[in-house]
Amino acid sequence: DGGITQSPKYLFRKEGQNVTLSCEQNLNHDAMYWYRQDPGQGLRLIYYSQIVNDFQKGDIAEGYSVSREKKESFPLTVTSAQKNPTAFYLCASSLQGDSNQPQHFGDGTRLSIL
Amino acid sequence: GQQVMQIPQYQHVQEGEDFTTYCNSSTTLSNIQWYKQRPGGHPVFLIQLVKSGEVKKQKRLTFQFGEAKKNSSLHITATQTTDVGTYFCAGSQDDYKLSFGAGTTVTVRA
Image 1 (tube, chains in turn orange, cyan):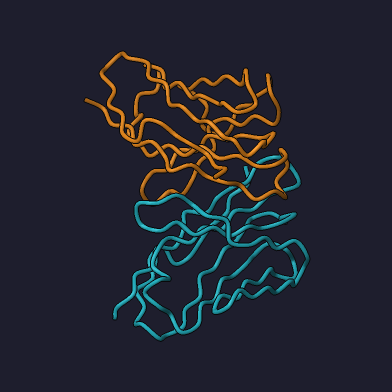
Image 2 (cartoon, rainbow over the protein chains, first blue to last red):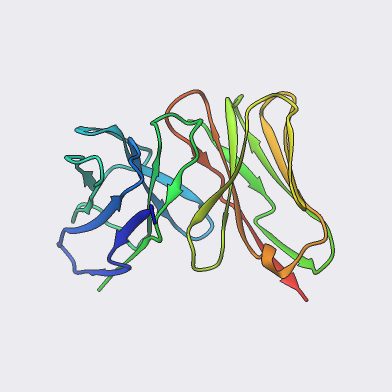
């Protein structure tokens, strides 16, 4: 079955620690996205990548970093500079990197501060 | 920046009743998408509207795009318990990004 796999499902971060959230897709999609979901605020775009080896900042990129070395993978690092990292993180992909394409989401990673 | 507002934030519906959730943008949109997120789940794409005044139906769900392409609505008739979840609209201004509304969370009284 094709889809998007996010891991881990739950993640805990200590103060001053960087953590990396994994996102893998086998849909052969060009574009991948990272969103943050907080209660009552919908989905906010952190980073997106339209093609391998290229990515752009979204609306709330500060304190986050990404890489896109492989088409299938788009890991998100939450750095210690992100002072309020507790949230539900969703990875998505679309066939192409334009807004007319439906986005397919993974099951998410819930990040909490220890 | 572009903002997409959704109302109401919460909708409590008696099973069998109809309800509507609304999505409004401060700017003209090139297209609008609707997603549903079940409790504990992830958003799932429902539909996309592109044309001014467009209306699309999926069984008991009716989606509409406004004439000015600044607003959209989702109307559900004869609500069932399977309709529980959060419905998001997401709009775009001809770029590569979707702006999501905050969602309408629907609960159903049996």
